[in-house]
Image (cartoon, rainbow, N blue to C red; front, top):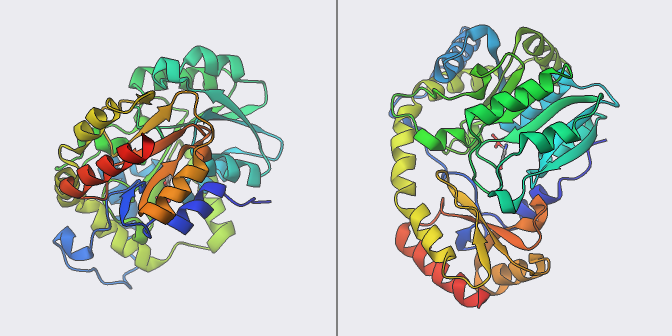
Length: 357
Ligand SMILES: Cc1ncc(COP(=O)(O)O)c(C=O)c1O
């Protein structure tokens, strides 16, 4: 059974409804006109092949490794459905993004976790992962950039994790929906997909977070042939086939993300440094110090669960941060610079600083 996702329920209650938004984790919504190309015809069946091809070109992988999906959420579902049987184990990072756990459990898997420690700067320790793997582990799951800290994992570490998985006949699933933030591609090609690092790596992503096209649900799974085949079977089982209009829009949007990269860079410019500088002024606070992206994690040493305070800041002061409680860090919050323009961002940080003091 698919249990409610506490984080998503909370996000639906608060995100987009609070004026000083330091919580939302994606580039603000882009309109179709910002792609600079006309809307495509929505009833040309060749769009299915074109969509697959453009996803392959964008990710610099062979076409046969691509399965289109309805956003990263659906891609995660398809990837899990292609890899898991009831009773299998999934090993997920902690802190972590709750749907990666709930979806696996919904499909009958057992979820175990491995910790990314604050004392290691939330880096992944392959030794810790290796120690947590069992003979029933089918998938090791990580986000890159890490949600909620924004910390990047190196290709070398991802290869090590893939080897640990391979020794058990398992896969490494990399949710790389935030990964293009490292080098938003103005040439429209994301050169750094984890899919290319090892045969047993499955990558999922979408145009949601980096490009502001979340409402169009343009996503994909990248994987080896057996995963592609089973993910396609899972599409048939869930909806027969994806909408033709989705493929038509998706093909054009993916082919034109270069313009949205330029837009995203403009929206983010300079704000990560402002956030880091601000965090250094908060007593007893540690900052996850992401090197790219649009959020980082603030943790307050020795603090109790901050959720009640965070909700009161939202309700009484119109200021929202992402409650760490939903990611397994109750004494922390995710701070995002995606939404507010620089001056308002600075004003919101000043207000948050006063509330924290
Ligand atoms: C790590 C991660 N993966 C997936 C998603 C969902 O992406 P999409 O909107 O493309 O389904 C999110 C949304 O917050 C996320 O943080």
